[in-house]
Length: 107
Image 1: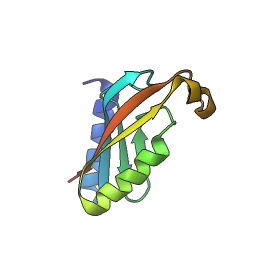
Image 2: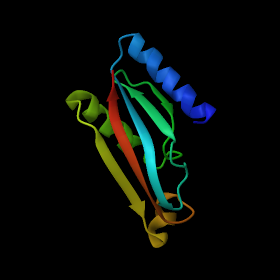
Image 3: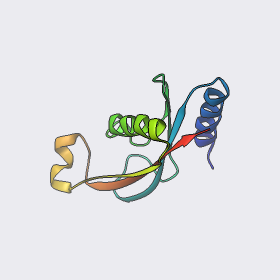
Image 4: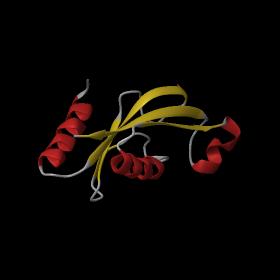
């Protein structure tokens, strides 16, 4: 585990210890081009705090929205995002790829 991932887990743990509801999103698999490697994490609190990154910004909003749903329901989810090479430039990416993100509630 790299230092960045440890920092995200530490931050999320502090939020939980402070009484926050927190979800953790982790990149579990990538195919083709992906801005962040497998193991990258994003912590999201119910109060709107965020730490880390799972995409370099491309899908962060959708992951944060899913994190809110996971915090409310307690049911983990796997999200898959993809873009073809042809559409990649339209959404601000250098080339196409797919990323899967596991979102779970902590605490």
